[in-house]
Image (cartoon, rainbow, N blue to C red; front, side, top):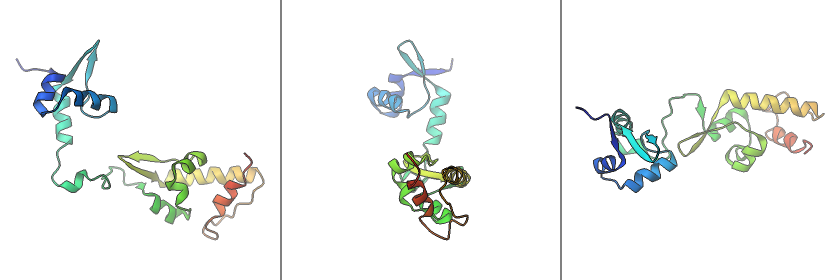
Length: 157
């Protein structure tokens, strides 16, 4: 009879890891999906095999932290968004600035990426809010590079 699931110790032996490593991975949300019933942790063999297949690499550059091949072609870097939308790059790269302005972003591995349509929608919302508060917003954002940021700074707290 073929095994459907294996326990933590068996998986640790299979991969040459410590069971503590698997425990740490679970707490970090890494590794294969697992099943936990009471205190017993088991891993389905098909989940293990799927995780092993995803972990296969044909070149070392594939696992580099600055190379992320996303399945979404609409994701753009801060530099690309800054150039396309004529925004100062630091509002996209500084975490506190992104959070305070409510700029939509995604984590892709260790990288921050943006969707152009979400940034456009965010800019439209900001422009509408500024106009509602009586702050003049030029219709052509390329006419002045920092106009949007200056207008955001003048918003009442």
